[in-house]
Structures are given as structure tokens and as C-alpha cells.
Amino acid sequence: MRLYRALLLAATLLALGVISLGAYVRLSDAGLGCPDWPGCYGHLLGVPDTAHEHAAAQQAFPGSPVETHKAWKEMTHRYFAGTLGLLIAAIAVLAWRQRRTPGRSPWIATGLIGIVGLQALLGMWTVTLLLRPVVVTAHLLGGMTTLALLVWLLLASGAAAKVESPGGTAALRLHAALALLAVVVQIALGGWVSSNYAALICNDFPTCLGTWVPDMDFATAFSLHRELGRTGAGDFLPGAALVAIQWSHRLGALVVAALAGTLAWRLWRSPARRAWGIWLGLSLAAQIALGIANVLLFLPLHLAVAHNLGAAVLLAVVLALNIALAAGEAGAPAR
Image 1 (cartoon, one colour):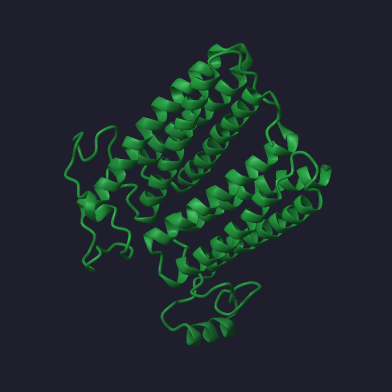
Image 2: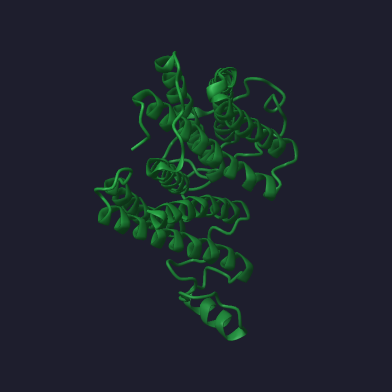
């Protein structure tokens, strides 16, 4: 039992690390640091770092100049993701061996293995399809889904106490569910901003290009079947489309702030739930501050990565709250 929980905790923390590393690779323009997959210029271990290896790599991949620092970033992310996959496989094996133990969910653990396999495919397509936005965004959502399911399994293992819900439980659970939905949608919008490099199209705040409602092209902005920086017809993506992407993300942030903020306030008012209100309020405030700082400071790499990590933490907190409230309603630990 201790081993199972230890593996879950390690996998959850590693998932946060993999999400952060993925953001770092993407935001430092190293997503195509390796033109092949799963290796890097044919190397499964390491990257080309000698003159001879550089020459061989350039001959094998003439359209992809070797940039060793970018290649190492990409391969480090792959190594960490591979380690996470092995941890999840071990968790699934233990879950099936201990399936009669309360708090074990072998089917969720098995589903996690499927998601890891899909993530591997998305990682490969990210490279072979040259950072196509829909693939990059799906890869981000797959990472967040992996984290969410690990949090679910960790709580189900009995690693957290239930939340007492003395009255108003149904309304509070509905409020928490709506906040969770808003956070998920906002993460998808944030991924779409990042994968389209639309973070700095509006370099002012709270307005965008000096106005509250700038010129926007939503149809082109949210067309899924297109290459990076291009429309579905192959033309350059217009600025109005990038503005629509950024503006939608800001609107989503307002919805999350309203739902999660009022939820944190309701939780804080109840002594039995005050700790949850504090955690939710702090994670929400940090994420809002990071989002604003990224715009005003022109997207410094460390703050941009922190913003991605903050989204993962906020998702984990809101999901854990929903699970805990459901357990409190049932009067038993989450399963």
C-alpha cells in the first residue's frame, strides 16, 4: 500500500515537471530541436555533439541544422516523459494486483497507460507535422489529463481527508463543477494561444491594442486544420485571428476568476472548508498575476513557464476540491 501511494505521489510530481519542461521546450523555440522521433538525429541516447556527429546528422537531415542546446532541451523532456510512462505502468500493475483493496482503481490506471501511448503519438506528430497548432494543443491537454487522473488516483488511495459539507452541499458541488469546467476550457484556450504564438499580439492590459473590442477574425483563429502561422487555405495567418485567440483567452480568464474566486470566498467563509478556500484563492491569484505579468513584461521565459505550471496547479486544486466535496457528500473517502 505504501509503495502504491509513493509511486502515485512521485508520478504526480513528475507529471508537473513534465508539463513545465514541455512548456519550456515550446516557449524556448526548441520544439523542433530534434527532427526525428523517438531519437534525436538518430541518437536514442544523447544528441550529436562532436564535429563528426554534426556532419553525419547534417547529411541525414539536410533541412534541419543541428542546434545542440535545443536538441538537449527536447531530449530531456522526452526522457522525463518516458520515466513518467514507466511509473504509470508500474502503478497500473500494482493497481491490478491490489484491485480488491479499497481505493484502488485499475481501470483508471489502465486508461492512463492509453493516454501515455496517445501522448507519445502526439509528441511524434508534433515533430513530424512541424508544430501544427491542433497537435501541440492536444499534446498539452493530454499532459493535463494525465496529471488530473494521477491526482484522482492519489486521492482515491486515501492520501487526503474528505471535506465535511454541513449544508448547501448540492449548490457548492455545482459551483465547484462549473469552476472545474471553466478551468479546463481556459487551459485549452491557453494552449491555443501558446501553440499559435499569440501571447504578445496584444501588448497592453487590460485593453487589447488600445481598445476593449479590437478587430478580430474568429473563424480563422479557431480553424483546426491548418499549419502553424497559416490559414486553412495556406495564406499567412492574419493579425486579426491572433487577436481573436488572445482576446478569447482573456475572456476565459474573467470567467475563471469569477467562478473560482466566488467559490474560494464561499469556502473561506466556512470554518470546515477554509483551508480549501485559501489554497484555491492563492492558486487563482498567482495564476492571474502571472498572466498579467507575462503581457506587461513581454513574455519572459521563466514567467511563461510558471504560467503553464500555475495552470496545472490550479487544475489539480479545483479537481481535488470536487473529489473531496463528492466524498463529503457520500460520507466516505473518495474511491
